[in-house]
Length: 449
Ligand SMILES: C[S@@+](CC[C@H](N)C(=O)[O-])C[C@H]1O[C@@H](n2cnc3c(N)ncnc32)[C@H](O)[C@@H]1O
Ligand code: SF4
Image (cartoon, rainbow, N blue to C red):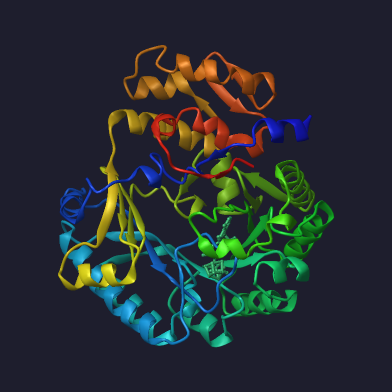
């Protein structure tokens, strides 16, 4: 039955870290528009800040992130200068001084930055924003390049959460993805982080990678849990070689098929459940006492470009090449090519390439998709009424859910749609039913499972 479901729904749909999703952003939102949006933010609104560091020492063949391999530090140093100037530009466009509650550093690998550059960025932020007491400051870490000195620098800069890239501990899998990272390397970084007071730890794991098997991912879950992270992410490998040419290095004949992917997800998820982790949304797990698990219980769980979060700030400002921001008016994305990013900032302009202004219909559908992706349930009637939608607005979508209900993926009770426990791996498919852009779009996405 499950293999059947995986085959029936072997479709490609977005990951819904936003709605509308990034392939539907366009040039109608430019730097001038972004400037006006920034100027229109209500003073006193709490902010979240995201910083993108698009550099790595070596390319992992599976990587779907915006990153570039550098062998020297010069391009990173030049990038940091641009980042500092962009922080000034954005802060100057805001109507006053704002407090930041969540700061997240991603990439690429923020562990490519020197301690001195970390300090200069943190000094700039302190000069331009009020970093709220108790602010959550999270950094993505590649254990292969992090040193104990680096960890000390992070702790000194106020970092209190680290997200550690692992993927899998198996040597054959690591060889096939060009990411050799023995267990001891990850264990050592975990030890340094804890020793220097960065106690909140997330670990990124993946399934659907070449040579992964069901017993293998169970072992992976055991090894990850033995390091006692409070959170784990279990991402399905998104194989999109038409977008990421280096993924052509992945041996496609060693990739698990869709039913195998589903079995791997379920096996790893079940093992994590046995080990005391609560399932969060589509692909995250957390210990019961962790903020994410508490937010889920209290209905406060949210999803943004970094995945699941407790961050409820209405404004997320993205800094750096390719960074995405979410404002009450809509989404903006910076240009990705480093030279365009630098040129834009040097001219004193926001380096925005594209974005989208939200319509009332986008907000309505966005809330439904957010509820499905976070709480695995949405009350279409209640959400619709809040947005002023007519009764019956989603009649076509409810019809479209019938086969999914027949297959046990969702239950539909009046206008309340709930993803079943067995349907959890298909949550993106349920969310996609409410995506008005998907029907007209031509974007190619990754597999649903
Ligand atoms: C920016 S990386 C994490 C930090 C650091 N660069 C590292 O790899 O250790 C973000 C995470 O995205 C996930 N990821 C990257 N490419 C992916 C893909 N093609 N499909 C699914 N997940 C992917 C990986 O789990 C990775 O750890
Ligand atoms: S997975 Fe992380 S370390 Fe590997 S290339 Fe991508 S961003 Fe860099």
